[in-house]
Length: 240
Image (cartoon, rainbow, N blue to C red; front, side):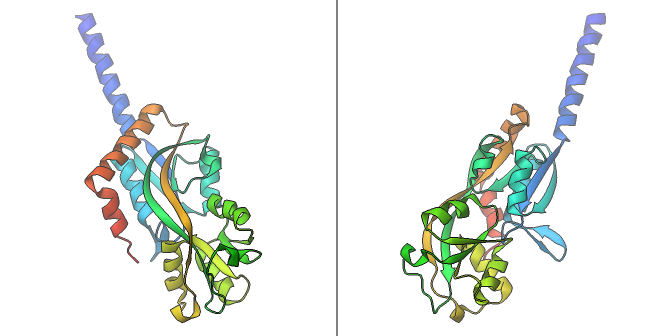
């Protein structure tokens, strides 16, 4: 009789441990930038914000999601202050986090005023260009393109600097820049044609400090969302 009771007790303890694990909080940081994450009427919204919450719940976690600047978000994952982030590749995440999958590919462009058209990359040499502070892509292209980077908190500020004559162009993902142009109320006649510089993936990164079982649950949840169209549906909530 005693072995049966012991087995039942152990089974119940295992069940309770699993239940507790599935109620565990997942600390998410969402980059406050354009359609990925922003405040609207005092409430956080955005593709990356919604996807982070949905992935956490699908994997059995309770999401604790915060909007932060790009540089701080990457730093928090690196310092074990956050468990997950959805962002373009950054070398500071290479050791601290595992890339569990790509959710989007961004077209990266440079955008200037109509009176100073950007016809090719050579037109950027020596120019002062607004970039988002802390972006790996922007830091790398600063060297490759031989620009003078002007770090900004977001693209909206970059365009304000552009129209004030403080910078010669703004670099970033086309979708994010288009959103910023609309948000600050710029008229299209003031801007030239965007110059395409390349592409950048957007990946889901999960802290390596999470147990492997937890990372696998999140990976499987993302795989399901990619297969059943959930990622595409969430993306479609924020058209330009």
